[in-house]
Length: 303
Length: 335
Image 1 (cartoon, rainbow over the protein chains, first blue to last red):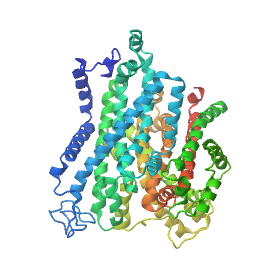
Image 2: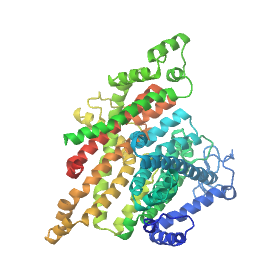
Image 3: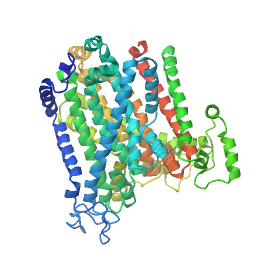
């Protein structure tokens, strides 16, 4: 894909696109881990979409006769609650299924916000250079000077705890990575002949930035976007775990872990399953990310 | 070299100013009245309110307030904690060694396993060891460490009963801090049972905090090593008939470790962020737990100064890494 784009920017719907995708899929599917990651991810998306159909119970329904019921295969468990119940008698499986909605939503919203912010700032900085560049990049450096979780914590303290504010805070923290990437790519592309040609042909600043240059910076952005997706899920779960993200009784996995903490030595399942769900989701996305990098990076591909 | 160093420091000045602005702005961005916010949940009498307003200079123009704040910070005045009534800097000094000790052992754990594993994986590229190591590293990299910590507690503290659940040392030991590092202090006092206690408290949190750096270091060492193993001078060394151990140890490793050193340095931010979670889980009395506790106690003076101090530490460490990198890699200095 990126080899053909060195000659001409790829226009939407060009005949190149299908062959581009085929090449991409060819390299992506070589990576067994990436394919496994993709399958798991698709299953997670399906679980999130059809949670109301799949879950045996509503996520907030309490069974007062079944507090901390162990999973079905353990003594004391029953097939009524396959993965057991939590300290207030809610079905673990149902809550986990609904929790997938939150994690995927968090990933999608955070990456979208960070992408839009990062692309805008990176384009402006790389295209105009000068004081615009200096001002934007110094602010990005500043954001990166703080450990990400600490900055997110402080931002949530200012904005107030909650899922939406946590997502805002995390996207702000992750956004400099995109800005740096776009800036570097724009600077590399800007002096290329096709850009000069477009400029001579009379393209304005906006057209040059968005239609001529941006499509050629997509590959690294896609990879970074995937990594940020998993980072966002981890950080949101961490904030939830610390009590500053999604608030109970939201079945967000990190929040579930926080309220399960005091039972760790009595009921292993209330701690194990939500964390396992986070790990599997993040791992699947990181596997996809590795595969995307291999498939989209022409330097690695040739070797 | 000196020019390189001065140049690097000059580049940090805008960031330094930015960090102070962030810390300064933090208290003022909090919802509600900053003085009431700083006074905590107990509130203040109207007379005390005016007094505090005067004391913190809220009646001055913003830029004057900022100048005042920078002046205070520059002279080492980081304010007084609302909840403990002790100077923030003093609290920081007593808690920071705990975080440093934990981070140090976490990093040792990560390096001692990560570097040899990465080297071995690169040398045996494509082998089952390589594949399983890279798989494990990706799992480690994807790990929600707060959950990992809880799992280790369930298994080692709950099920096996080998390690304590939380804290830094058994309560029966009280050592007047010399260095603030429990392990070093107990050696200095010659109290071996205290050392044992300190180490048994340290092992789980260090593993938890070291997990992500371990994964990153193993991956980075492997790829750096792979790159170096393809170089001409390594082929020459092999062609000369040197043993595999000598080629890897003397020729390849030295150059492969250059990017690894940078990676290790860049993990400091990760460590400090991880310390927030690890210390919270294990009730480890360091600055990570201090920050979280202060947020919940609404002790915003501590949050403000902690934010500033932690950012300064990260900045200083990054500078040291840059300089070290230039020392071991002369090509950087020229650029």
